[in-house]
Image 1 (cartoon, helix red, strand yellow):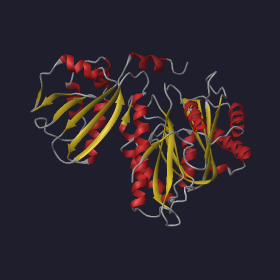
Image 2 (image 1 turned 120 degrees about the vertical axis):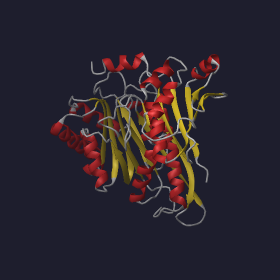
Image 3 (image 1 turned 90 degrees about the horizontal axis):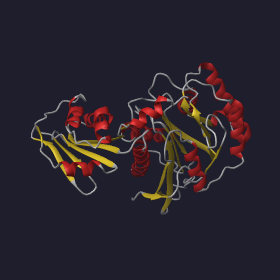
Image 4 (image 1 turned 90 degrees about the vertical axis):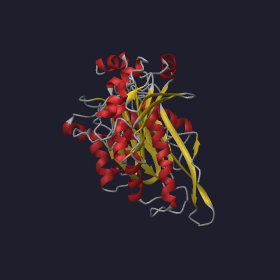
Length: 415
């Protein structure tokens, strides 16, 4: 069954509304808080940062997901991360959730929280609560409300990230099919190098699906989507990916790993992949998106490791920024990645929108047309195809170039 892209994001699925506001948490004259609200209790799945230092909202959300509690609301702020704040940070989470629960008339442990920004400072509870009260009054199911929410969770992002799809599943009546929707939003520009997690990303679906299978689908899909991007090699303290299911599509509930589950996973992969690539291309200071596609590797894990090594290489990133076809840097990044391979049998191509340039084969860097290489490196999306000639496995990873602006942005991020 075909996965169809549609307009919208976090509010595309039935049962979800969104809002945002200017709470002046850190920024001025811009929206800096967002809320997602579900009409009824939702099953929720999540993956979180592998950083040993976990922000308070990450610990709060992990508890809700781990204990199989239903979710009704997500509250996200930007500017201050509520990380490195000790017990005071957890107290703030409890008080923020309690205020949200009171305003919306829902259980405290059905409120999920997300924060992004500077590590260390405490969040201003009065402004947080004022923002929550304001957003509760403006919740809307419109696509515009979802878009506004995706803008409000941005920090150093230059563009908002949202996407949505729809697909068909058997109806609960077992007569015909019904349309199911899945959408989401994410933010991420710096401190991006996920590992079993992502930056901040929130997904919603109206698919009726078993909670355990919802978690399995998310944990499976994240490996080849969000876990395959790298901007700067830093894994954040706040990385969170949450998926809420309202079950309002009236599809026959997915209770086993059948054809409907496979379709759902395909839709989930489509949404996560698009959000991941958008984040990779919008890395702090970036002027190019980089893709490394490794094919014919001996194992899937080796393919992933090789691809990630290329996009995470600072020298490859700098080479792309300078549009310098110093192709030995890609070869070098493959060589130190870890997996064993024979350099004499691999090929590396630079793939453009309309043209392809081979610069390594038969164990040697090739003589190539410098003008052609410059033209390909001038495109926004830079793609390397690395054929390992060892097996049948493949993987793709995404990143961005390394520019002077990255240093400028992070040199005074706090001040």
